[in-house]
Picture 1 (tube, one colour):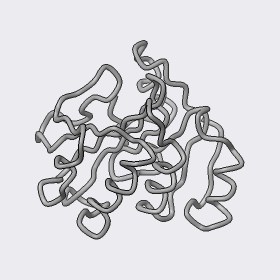
Picture 2 (picture 1 turned 60 degrees about the vertical axis):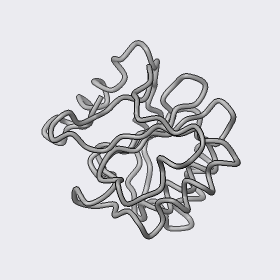
Picture 3 (picture 1 turned 90 degrees about the vertical axis):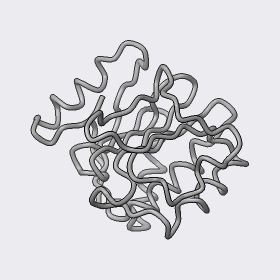
Length: 168
């Protein structure tokens, strides 16, 4: 499911949506200006009792694994995107209660570039992938599903969190 910048953007997206387990349908591609702000805004928007988030990268200096419900195992929907080199991987429940804990565990402790921090992030809601950011939020590798309304994305552009968004 990893996004590869060596593929064309449409080929990478098709690779992502070909997974019949997730039934994910990318609705919008996102051109990210501020990675942490985008992540935190989407976490707050998608947080529900039926949501989970996964992080992959160098996470050992965070306290993500200490959050209740943390798992180091892949799920049907949230899978590792990089097999070599093997990176840290954690899946967490993403609820209104855990979202602030997750934000606190990573804010100012995790980089959003190079292999020094978060490389891939996925959010699942209702058993489907709702948000994907691979390769350090590379512009060809960030998208949301129909779970995220266009009006919300327009606000993120207005607030300069996104440069833009476009139909996938």
